[in-house]
Amino acid sequence: MKQPVFTGAAVAIITPMHADGTVNFEELGRIIDDQIAHGTDAIVICGTTGESAALSHEEHVECIRFAVKHTAKRVPVIAGTGSNDTAFAIEISKEAEEAGADALLLVTPYYNKTSQAGLIAHYTAIANAVTLPCIIYNVPSGVNLQPATLAELAKLPNVNAVKEASGNISQVADVAALCGEELNIYSGNDDQIVPILSLGGKGVISVLSNVAPQQAHDICAAWFSGDTAKSLELQLKALPLCHALFADVNPIPVKWAMNRLGWNAGPLRLPLVEPSAAVQQSLENEMKAYGVLK
Image (cartoon, rainbow, N blue to C red):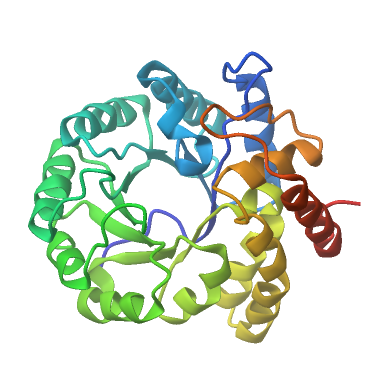
């Protein structure tokens, strides 16, 4: 049995920026503190939601180092170190380990989408280069990791979990059946937390947590306390806001929402731009309806 890196809701945290586009580390620290104060079970730094694709190598590593130091072991810090370049993923994964990260989040290769055999080779090379637990991130923008492929990768001692964002619940069920306790499963979609928990999932890596950390935590906490009806009620209540947060390319909506809530989230980095007026109005309406915006 592989112990999960965390149980509950981890925030895929935004990277706040100054007006000039540089990383606002002071605000990042404030956001981390607020997340932990409101029940967040782990911090995922430099994920897709953190605009990792637009960070320089130096900024990427600096953000990981800052998150580790500022979190100070209060909750686990999971560093996004995936890449479509295996050699670069190995390099930055080693740097994250040296920085003190508790685990790695490794997205499926994008653009140069490989075969299932290539995925096994890619993840094996990364896992063998580090000692940290590795969470594989299966996301539709890359290539789909088949359940049998995950079962093969789960044989590696430090391949600990999969973040499942395929949206295919039948596929997640197959992964659970094939891998059992050799691979932990996290939801990568906020609208599928409870369905994946019902298949033995250990929680969610969440965008919703940025704007509603306590609520995302509570969906999972209710489930694990045995109050599955309450967990379902909370999941269904969150659905409209979950949908609004993905009405444009992530993290466009959530960064706007964080600014609207009073955080100094700052601008997006190109090629991402501000959401349309319609998306802004939808976010405004749903945050008010959900109770996170007065």
